[in-house]
Image (cartoon, rainbow, N blue to C red; front, side):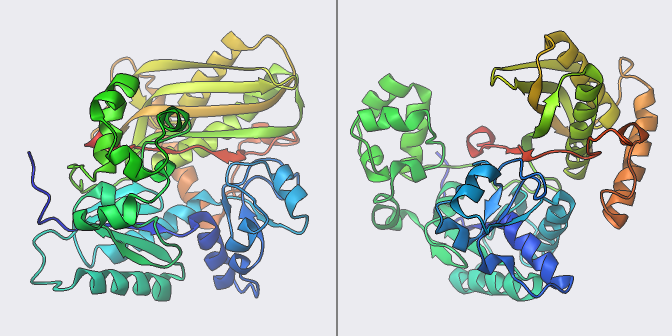
Length: 420
């Protein structure tokens, strides 16, 4: 068995990342209002008021506004709520700026998501005699130089460091070493444990397991009988057992990228639906390329005005980051599935990713993708420099459909359990 005793791992988590980064950007542009100090959210479209809440301010929490609920519902709770649309290119810039600062301390950094990083300081005691002081220095530098706050968890493995960073918020440093598990982690609700989700929680409650300590001290044989291998995994986590390495990477390690939108009108024409799919594919493609990944699985899902839903996916025999390819496959899947019902929500998602550092074309791939890739890179560069509306496809002119649409971002960052 591996020995974690001498390892020192930090987990850095940006507090309310999307909202914090939006607020910092607004202040840098001369705004007099810090939206972190008022009831505010990031998500959807502030004009049409469609979409969902992606991030919320601390004052918004007082109105019981939750991440994932509709903007309509949030406005019912707080009519004066400030709404800012998501700016994904801005988020990547802020994330990259943070990582550049972190590189000054250690070369071993794993970007777990756009707003989370693991850092390995193992065998660096001579350089950093006090790791708690080091964490406070990093936290304070990020706040002073970049304008937003983070939480830092410290432990001897990634799991405990991640749990620690969530114990006290915001702008805090918390340690959670094995000797501290019983005092700091076991009293927490069991749903606070990584990999205990909505499906697992009621099963644990049926076993009278309500805290992480209850789970840690439960009969492992019973857990494995009720939950199979998942029972073993969460029992290990409850006892702080986890051995994965901090994997140095230059790209965000993600499982899939998706985007969906609730449309302000009933889409009843195939041509309209195809435009919505292209618009969604634009944002998905841009985020895919920005994460330095290519995909080999494309999926489509939609919901009708009568609230019935359907979805389909297709595996392709090559990897691509081309907007045109993603949109083309998504439109084909849509045409196979759609029965002509009026639509109110459409989503596009890509998965089965690989880093584009090692991605090669094949004889089966459409050779136009090489030209499309160059075109996409040029468009991304223009939009990054001059704004997302600086260049659009002519098919969207006078269509009433936004060129880059998406009220819901659905980036599925790689789960820790799958990278052990």
